[in-house]
Length: 114
Image (cartoon, rainbow, N blue to C red; front, side, top):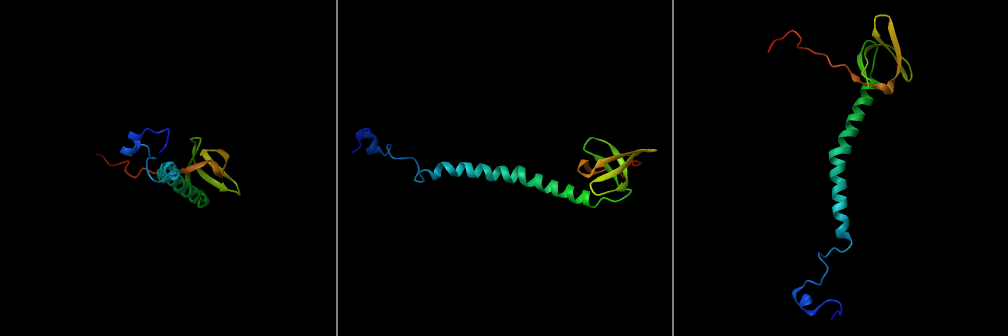
């Protein structure tokens, strides 16, 4: 008999440790939270990042792109780590390939009415 725990608690089973897992019982919720966090946040972000890297590696002259800073333009030349972007007539800027946010969305239904 344990002198710290009253006899009536041991007879009702209240003095025993909750659950039979011990220290592992506190670790399971943390692992579960990490798995949920990974599936809901990290996996989609990695998939999106890989798609953007694929898009950047497949850029070619004449593609219309948007930079992460919000500049729309057409690619005039491609170098190792930079791109020459035509943003207006007679206006060209050199931007890093890593600054490309994606291809410009083309509106195919400009003339259609709803």
